[in-house]
Amino acid sequence: MNKLKSFFRHKESPLPPPPSLSQEITLLPDSETWQGNLPCVHGPNDGCNKHNPARNPICFDSSLLPSGSKTKASGNQPPTDPFPSSYAFHEIWSTLSKDLSLGCLTTLPPIHKSLPLSISFYHLYELLRKHHTNALNSSEDLGILACAATTGSNPSLSWVLTPLITAQKTLHLEFTLAFILQTDLGGWTEATTHGHAVVKNGLIGSGYRNFKPCLHTHIKFTSVKGEGKNHVRYSAVNFTTTDSEGAEKKHEWKSEEEKKIEGLFCGKCYTETVMRIRLIGDKTLVSVQVYKDLGEGLHPGDGKWLSLVRPDVAVQRDKSDFMRIPKTFETVLEDDQDN
Figure 1: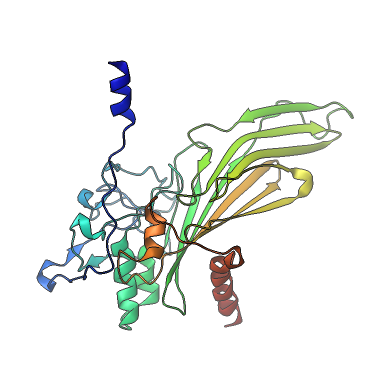
Figure 2 (figure 1 turned 180 degrees about the vertical axis):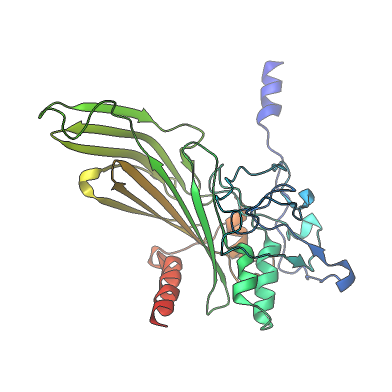
């Protein structure tokens, strides 16, 4: 009997077949156009510090979220100033069918359990449809995906989402996540007797340590170490990366290195990750930047999009393509500075 219970507990429902490119996308008439959720909204009084800083009542349709998703406030910390200068009111309306078999409500998997973002195909489609018809207002329409906030987790996680439409008319996203690690050395100060060392080791909480840049790669921060010796404070962070081929690699950063940069390439979908660790005062700043190429947004059956959202679909990328997506953001930044 126990074996039978175990079988049903672990058995997963089979995935429905992916949308086919042969399925025609028929747009709804204007009278049936529906309002979608902003990516940062997971409840009727929710949002990020750019879209709903005062946490006022906002459009929210729980039926648009994946099955089993939370339908309560995401836990973003409201800003000190509830109406920052960057505040702007945004809405997204869609002409796509809500029929689940068509895949228009399919959502990118979360990068971290504390990162409250639900970016669906209909977001991608509506923005790029406007771009193709020259109806896109970059500052207003792209602002739908420009989110930023700080979570209420411990440690807190600050995050920023930046969208970009490339010259090739594809949508790229940059997720920047940052958090601070610190170990309390008690009464140790820089004036502590020469040669006397104080060492503290700490594990990073199991509910916080895991980052999933995509379905195929994994980052796990396991421990942090603080040491005070010879009038100098040292820090160390241990983490593990797993690439799209399943190869696991252990890393250790020490503050003597000043800054550590690690890249993680996915050969099965269009995701690239850059990690940076550096010491700021007596605190260790860790940032994880995840870059995604979502494609042209013309059809939910596009292989580039499906490889990002379905474990049974993959593309084959050559490593020579690594860092192409981050470079598009660098090019735009350089152009803005030149202007």
